[in-house]
Amino acid sequence: MEPARRPRARRGAAPLPRPRGSLDGIASNLLTDRLRRLESGGVVERRIGASGAVVYALTPWGAELREPIEALVRWSGPLMATGPRADDAFDPRWLAIALPALLGGARSRHPIDIGVEVRDVLLAATVDRDGAQVAVDPELRPASGRRR
Image (cartoon, rainbow, N blue to C red):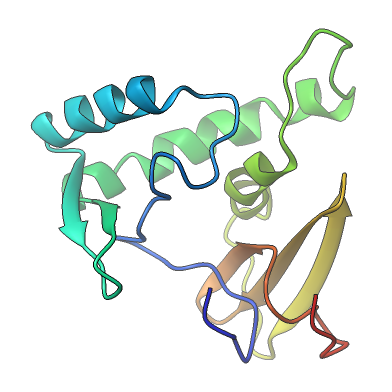
């Protein structure tokens, strides 16, 4: 990850992680199959990144899924408030999708940085004029400038 001046998540056609990169618990062959299906369905496109690695990005049509998915996240808020049951799977990185949806279009003229640490995973949320963005394990911790 490149050092960031501010912890931010990318918007729109943000690259998804490589299949073997950071999706613990999902077999790489299953993930590859799902990505290929999403690609053939026009939801994502396969690209070669600057480092030569394969990245997947949402197509404009795929990006239209953001609104209904965020609506489902907001709807499920009361269910999430009770916390996971003992048999529920949970990965703190999933909050990177939920937090912007739960902040529901919040904006600020002056950037606000918030750090949330869950199970040794740091999520850095920024709310600014563009809305809310979340970065997982950013290089810099919010408001401290300390490196991880």
